[in-house]
Image (cartoon, rainbow, N blue to C red; front, side, top):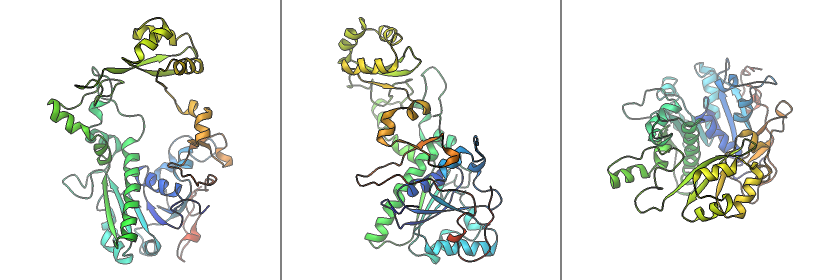
Length: 375
C-alpha cells in the first residue's frame, strides 16, 4: 500500500459491519491511513456475501474493502480479545458500528480501550446513538432516513414519500464520522486532548443537513413538503423568484432536467419555437443527448443530464476529473469504481486495490494463532 495521502502514518482499527462504519474506514483509507479491518473469522463482514460475484469475489466487497488490511478475530475468545487490545494500543483511531452495549458486554467498552490507549479516538455509529431512550434499538439506514425529516420532502406531492435509491443515511453517517475523527485528532495533537468517544446516530447527519426545515416551519407555520423534482426549501417560497425544473427525454433515451425561470424562458422560446414546458419537451425528443447539451449551452440554458452508472463510466468528463476510475485488479477488470474524494493539488497516482480476504494480513497482528481465511 502506498504511503501517499494526508493521513499517511495514521493507524485505524475498524470493526464495522455492512455500511456506516466501513464507509468511514474507507474514507480514511482513501486518504492514506492504514486501516486494519477486524472481522469475525467464521463469516466476516456481511458485505462479503452481498451482490453479484462474477469472478468469485462480490463486486461490492471489492469497493468497500479497498486499501484495507483484513484480519479475523473472535472477540468472545479471551486470547483473541487480547490480540485485539494489542492492536488498539498501537492505533490512533477505532471505528465501530455495533449496537450500543455490545462492546461493553465483550469487555471492550470505551473505559477499557482508553485505559489501554489514552490517546485513542473512538468513533461509534449506531442507529439512535449511545444515549437516549432509543439507544439500544438496532439501526437501519432507511429507518434513520424516516427520522431525519428527509422523507416528507422526497417524491411527488400527491404520492407517498420515497426513499433515496442508495444507503444515504449510512454513508452520510460515515462521512460525518470521518470529519469528526479528523477534528478529534487535531484536538488531541494540537490542543492537548486525550482519548475521546465520538457518538453519531445514523439519522443525525441528515437532520443537520436539512437545517432549514425548522426555520421554514417557523416562517410559514408548516413543515416543508415534497414538490416532486423541485426544491421545497427555497424555490417557490415567499420572496424567491419562481423557477422550476422541467424533465425532458431525448431521442436516444437519455433524460435531463432543464432549469426554467424568467431569464431562461425567452431563450427557450428562441430554441424551441415555444415558451411552454410542452414545447421544450417536444424539442428534446428530436435530438440526441450530446446535441441537446450543445444547443442548450449555446443558448445559455442551464440543464443537467440524468446520469447513471453506465453513462458516468463512459463519460470522458468523469474520467478526466478522476471521479470514476478503473479497478486495477484482474477480477474487477471490467468494473469502474468511484475515485477518491476529496483530491489535493499534490495528489500522486491512484493507489491500487488491495486483496481483501480475511486473514490476509496476519502479519499486522501481534504474535499468536493465525486467523482463518475465507475465500
